[in-house]
Length: 238
Image: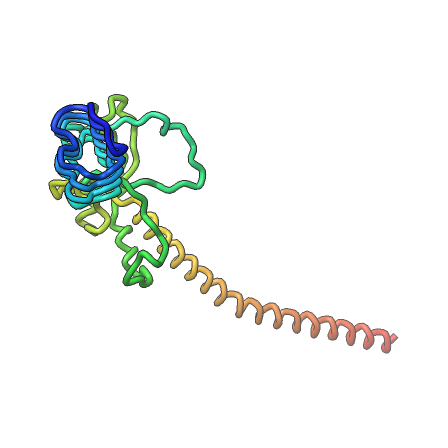
């Protein structure tokens, strides 16, 4: 165990060449070649060993890290195939955002502000692809879901045939899942198109309907006048 310049190291061959401050390395070869990095935390055998030069503010737990990156959290590596985190299921985060994960295992959220977007244009007919999708019911294989709960959704391979942009592939490039958020946006576009069409039809029907009501009102006035004239004529005959 060694501590200096607000640095903590436990193990062997740790922080050997590091001149930075406020680093924590626990494990053999942890932060071994991080020369000037600051406020890095490495836990486990060879944790953060790939961090180089001035890489700083990283947290590597059971992960070798990557050279040239800062302010990154990495937990576990390819040896881990499942993740369990307590305190998430059943815990409400009102007003929060949906979390996405890419094939590299990076977590993040999808922003919607225009400042993050290029080539913005109306969806138009692109959303009509959803009419070719085939929703199905299914059950995950027992090794994935021992309870075999009935599910509702789409098959990624089938969706890829319709529109590859609606599919997310795994690290091997094979279809893995469907971008249901994108499907929802396409559904919204088709709903709005249909709403505008119905509104236009209603408007088109409203105009002749108004004219018919106006003509009907005139006819009623004429009939009323004729009835009055006939009544007066009969009165004169008496």
